[in-house]
Length: 301
Image (tube, rainbow, N blue to C red; front, side, top):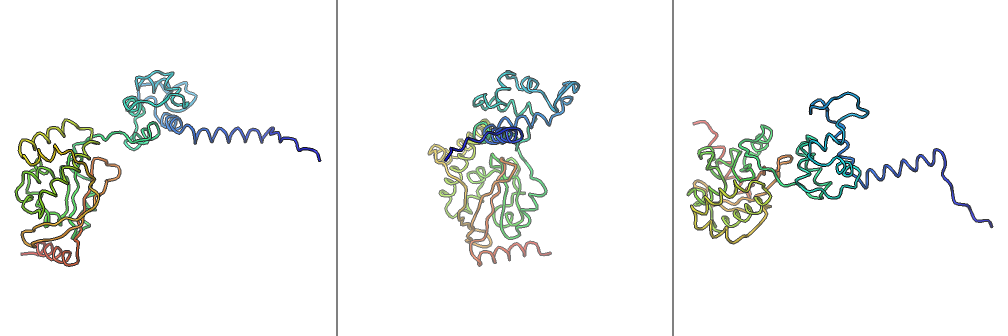
């Protein structure tokens, strides 16, 4: 028998093979370059002070992005071609600004370039969107709050007012989880195991704020609490870290007496500076007592 000769690709077959190889290279090997070129092509040169005439392709040129990012045009070209190595976080931040990336696009850039998300940007959030507030209000008998990255409480529902604390009666600058735990007597008195809860709060706060990117704001709050509370100072020096996650909380309520709640913490998508904590009654009896309390407070006099 004669040996079969190797198959030779010519014409359309060769073109298809090259196209497939190019597509695989683009989608599997250089996702970062593909993303950068796509974002660059979407920008309007005139919006950035560049002339829009005599352009063969849409968007900004590579050298224009490099100029805006204060990097070498040659190096930026290599980066798009998959030859630029691993850029530093500082350079990625400059490229993100040069390409006017949204927060989601900025995060995607870091994931492609460094395989990790960027550090959080602290935002002094004081309110939430109406949609998020309606989510809180849709939980009529489950206390729920939203806190920002510095653990200021920025939103709550009616159940939280009835069961946890009347946050509206507290000055906004004092409406902080740690300040309430260590400096506000009613909150402290409501805890059945204040020391255990306080240690948990301090440990989770330490872990949260390590990702914050607002060291001066954190330092100011920590210094304030260290001076105001020897207990906080001792707990802070323990250097414990924990995740909020899920758990059970027991309270001494002024009207209901001892109640049990199960809590779960949730991130707010698109807002890494915000998190929501929902407290559900732990038993049917607790649920009924909380519902009766809230309904009685809502009833007309």
